Image 1 (tube, one colour):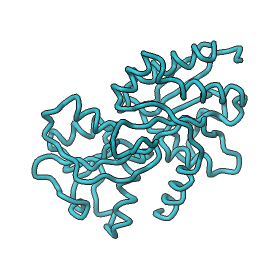
Image 2: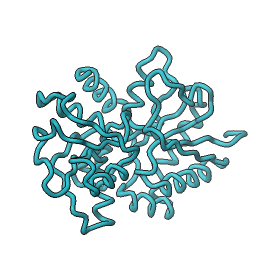
Image 3: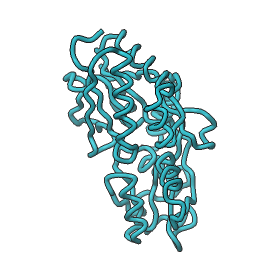
Image 4: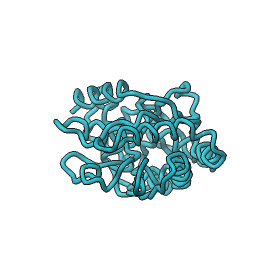
Length: 265
């Protein structure tokens, strides 16, 4: 199917464990019968508007990005990406077995008790591409008539780092990917932090393929992801990341998100 390696990149680690993407890369490679070269970009949750992106140059064939990157990269006349057509479902019961997640606003002891308390406070977020860590909170503030500019946003670099800053008292609250938050709570049951708001639901981070990747290859990647939970290694990695399995998706949820982001701009 491919006479060269498939290049897979994730923009979602370290908050989503690297072990998950390593297991997925192995499974996709076995399914397609080719080598999969996995790379990590830990500097951002996906390409930003106007920045160089790795799809047009065929540096990357398939990637996991934040939904905001999909919105931005498909808003141009010749989009460099398209959906693979498979997205994961969080174990979080609030997701109701759908490929959606939340931005959980987390506080420490004595922290703010509602979104109306956030103006004048320091709020950690992972990066300015992130839907759950940044845009979901801005959307919620705008919807409630709260001045976004009155909030002191502190960029941490990852959801895990945001929680570290919160634990050390360097920020007053943090906006965290709900899947990450649930995993951390499970791994650290004595953690003295609490969520005061759930922002969403929002569509989960999609798998995308460069537009000129052969359709047969993209379809094979979709099939591989949809069957990934049947692989023992992937199943264990999904469970550790607090995810169930991949399900088929189209662009409906992401188009709705694009409209929401446009209205709040």
